[in-house]
Length: 411
Image 1 (cartoon, rainbow, N blue to C red):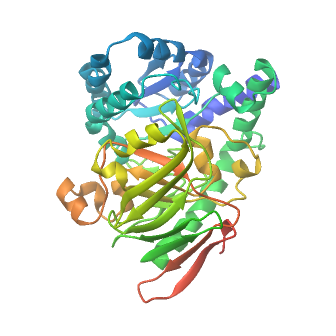
Image 2: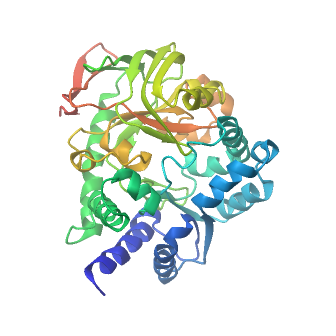
Image 3: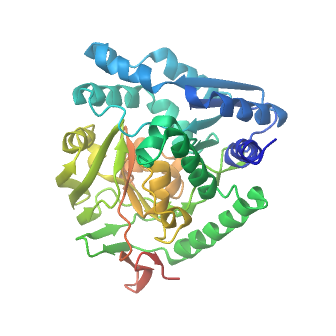
């Protein structure tokens, strides 16, 4: 086996053993692009070797998706297939792990009817609401990772041949996921321990508010709810099995109070949302809600995102990532949120993770709302980190502590 294929095999094993941490007798559901068939077979090989009961794959194809948007009537996008949602719920109830391979062409739907995109986003979000309860509450192990596809690789590296672009993107992904370390599994364990130290520090401080400022105009005050919990790296599912939801991951995160966000924030990286790019945008918040917005690219897409429901206009996640993270140092815009969010501090519009507040996983919707937890059909991360971003935390007794200085951890 040559060096590339050996690394590829180890990467598949890492996703199964560290990402999902598959257990004997557990089903594995994989969402994957058809271009990744060879890699998915490696994933299945390692999953079965680890004792997986079944590996079920849901395939997707960019060309077929594009054809659908060009030819199918609006009613198709307004109605998400119930059988598909029911199938995912059945697997979730059976304790399945869910591995999603995020590898979409960031401009796949740039020429598609934005009304169809908005209708599909709303219909799918509503149909999958119950299924997402299993992942948003960490009831099941889940992991998002990636492999290159030709169209995506050419978007990231437009000035080289297709083959060279694929090689460069594989190299960037392997570096970001620590695959070039002598022992990638150990390297991941060390990295997760480091993130845990940051999480513990922030939880001990129990900040009441965070203040964001940078020279691009970002000036934002964020109130954190009583009982908020910082998390990062990995977590445990309801069966107490440790898993890592994002590979790569460089963030530690919590939730804001749904009505406690005020000020202005500017994006610092393009956002790939539903096959379209939103770039150079600005959001103005008052009492937690977006009351004004601008975008130099993708204005209509951003408008539709914010109009999805009431919760889409509010923040559900606050995430801290140092500017000198390995992914940021690569100086590559991936046009893929999985990577770009791990190169930059970010927020998420929409639903908060109930696990980010004490007892949240056991609260009903009314209790979560009362605690200040945002609810929505969507959860969309967008990047705000910069090399001069400063973040100050304010404790309950009024003490101010520098958390980030010039884009990096201050402690």
